[in-house]
Image (cartoon, rainbow, N blue to C red):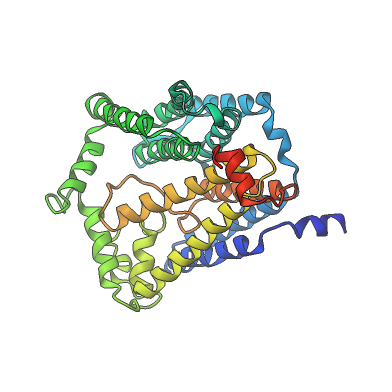
Length: 375
């Protein structure tokens, strides 16, 4: 009975908004038939992820406010990322996976959630002093460590997510405008350094294909070109489930992971895409609605960090699918095949629901005064 009442603390609107997104991914994978087992494997990952979500929703996560716990999680995550260079497996050119036989694990995914927790802990204690640029630099170092560890794999997509999580959380923490400009200047300098000394030739080609998408459609720009063709061919109502020619004829690569959005768009058309955006918008709305009622600044900032994490993944994936951003190998939340990102996503939502158990009902003006320092 006690556990039943704990489940009543779950935001069911948030939970049910994820189901159409999961369905969209599975139905897109299953529409290709043949020997493709992605859909059936994805169902297993979904079941595991949902179990984790409900377990986490019943945990009291106030222990995460402890500095020792956060340091342990961060150091453990960094050690795991470093160990990839010793025993990690290479997949699609990146040494970012642990091959466990029946399945593979990508540690960069849970490390994104760990970074959200680290920055949440740091800014929750210093949000009033955030105007001091020293705190921006220190927080940037926390993000820089996992950023560099995944860049050298090389996994440019995950590195961009780490950067955007840091940038987003710095922004919501109340950074001054002049320091915001300094952050962007630092970003440009960092990009120049990465371009000159870190990026591999194929990564440079991807970025150049973004600037000139039709310059090499048989080479570096092939994936982006086929993705835009697939999306455009979907029209208003789509071609129907199982009738996406770009995907079924293997013109569209990685239809189950990086380009599942393009495969879905071809079959469901503009109407399907609008519905997809609506459900994702509901998800982000409910995350923020729960975050703002957090018991302390720690819970508030964590919820905002989770929203930033989802938005960053969504924008980058959709952007590269429609040719507005370079192809970086970034998954789209809940749709793309894979267990590492699914478990991380539902773990993040489960932690948020666990925090909801001891949330408060506060007046908006009080929250603005306490969290934003205004009023």
